[in-house]
Image (cartoon, rainbow over all chains, first blue to last red):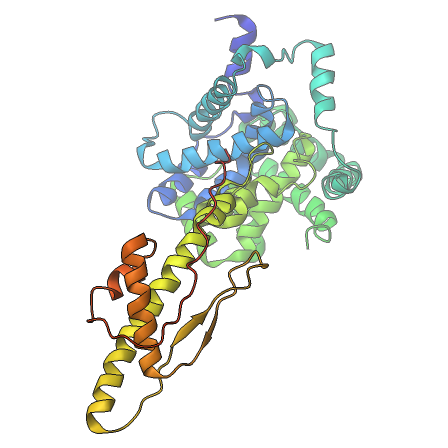
Length: 207
Length: 206
């Protein structure tokens, strides 16, 4: 396997954390027929999965269709998930296979649209693909993004550092505690308070 | 209490709860919309920080998946290049089907009417048929605008029988095949009407 393809087919570093107990609890509920539990898994991974699929399917509308299909496949296959791998790894593989199958069915080679995100030039092109929107359509997502960034800038340093290490770097509470030289409980509290402060800023946008 | 739950939700997102705590919280989500909404918003914050928000609506994909799981029509997104074959197919077979249905209903109604008339005659009364004849459509009109008007029972019988004779010769309609074989012919005034125009076949749209 080429090194580029290996980078693209492995879950990113930001996903590593914890023991997977959260996802496992949700998928168990899904296996019992709880669709709302699957909805929470969608909430958690929809953006990551769509971003992944867009590495294969450039058209945003088609990528949305493929992402939808990938999640539906995951839902239908949920009874067969045994927990031998992390849920996200399992979902990741389904998404990639769905994207590749889509390209094959459309008569396109799956490798044709792989993007090497390590290459700064290609990364910028990929990032620009997300900006192909109508002016009206940019409103909500951009407002949320701006509100979140504004709230982050206004946070005390310790809260800001804690949440950025968690959300951007994907570090566990233990790793953040070592980095910030504080107890794990303090890390948990700081991250929670940071989220609450940001949530207050975006609450009005989401109502 | 709610702050404690929200703190747990925050740790849940980060996968920092034990299996038992996760199971407890997941069960709580079913009956506590507030904690569930907190999870959704905390997830949204993370996506915004990582630059992963969907455009234009961050919740668009989730709603489509929800609709698909619930079987909502809104989840079905027609491909841009796909035509509307279902509507075309409906239009193709609807017209002759309507014609056949109309013919069949007329035949059934006529049979019951005849039966009622015979019984009425036997007791000395008179019955008004529900259906008696069909006025031919305006030849200049492209649509089938048949109008039903009442006729005396004898003329109804006569119409049906004569139409049945004609249909047996031409084998053009369903109801005539049914009616023509039911009653012995009675020679009376004749009322003729044209059959429905044959259905037009359209090329299949793919």
